Image 1: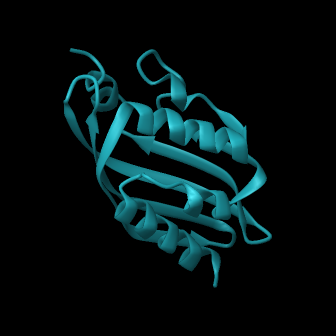
Image 2: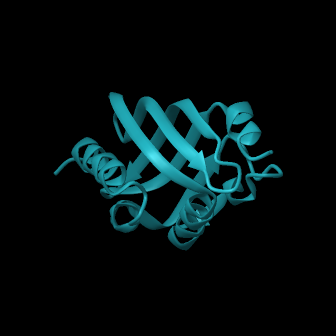
Length: 135
């Protein structure tokens, strides 16, 4: 299976399980990897701080799913060049504390080496995310 196929499979599994399982991500990421998120650890989204390992990615996912329930995660456009893949789509989450729903566009930039993800940078509507965390 090539990198694009593995990534598409991971996104489908993530959406199908509604973020209740992280196995697809632990299989995809290298032990040492660079995760960066648009909110960059801002107040209300502290889990989005930069991470540099697979364990850090899991901590990020635990932080996200402690605060939000997934409604959907729909990545439906992909652009590939060499070992870099850009995935584009939308996602919807419900904040567990405020019950606010946030629907956002999403762009992920991935870099692969030896069939593992070594970098993941995500871009989304940071303002909408942070507004969903306040009452």
